[in-house]
Length: 236
Ligand SMILES: [Zn+2]
Image 1 (spheres, rainbow, N blue to C red):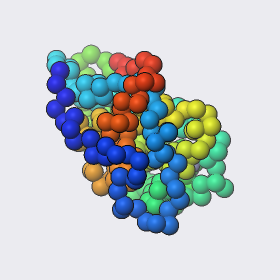
Image 2: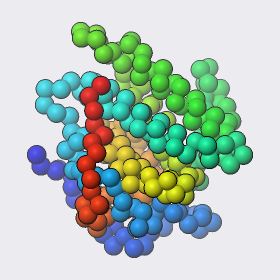
Image 3: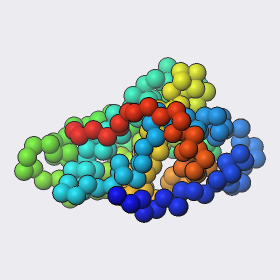
Image 4: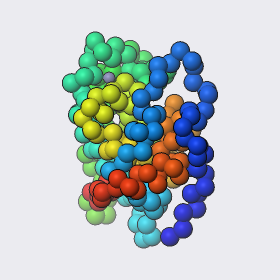
């Protein structure tokens, strides 16, 4: 299978410096952009092949299966550092310089702490992926017409959580030696999002500096040296 867009990720070959200068100078040094960490993965996959819709598999089924897996892995990743994510340490749901607000069922904006926001995310996504009317698992059941927009919504939420883990808790992730897992998970998740246009590029821009480094050739070669094998794709 060919890798159609392999060249497009090779943006920052010389990854010793920050790949872009868009971020404000006041921002703290981003630990997660240090090459010693961006190089680490738990596996060196051709992610492009992993995310491509296999022949004879229904698109919605493929989205459902992968999104459920991403949800489980991101939830697990967050649970490893959740004791450090408290109303005191993370008074707002922030990632880099962006602040997210939760909107309740009536569309009312709610200001909440990061752990509250993430709790809202995880419980609402859990509800959706286990709802047989939204994520049908039984043979012959149809996906709802709103399926695609719900998948996009889930991706947005899960991206916010991942961005918060990177920007606020990467130190703890490193202390637990889980940065390889996080980098692998994020690379896979982001390529999946791109493959199926599930998020606006504006939404993911806050981690562009990181993704450029993770997808750079130098970084991938180095990752190959540490590679074990852990497949994040599972059928539901
Ligand atoms: Zn936090």
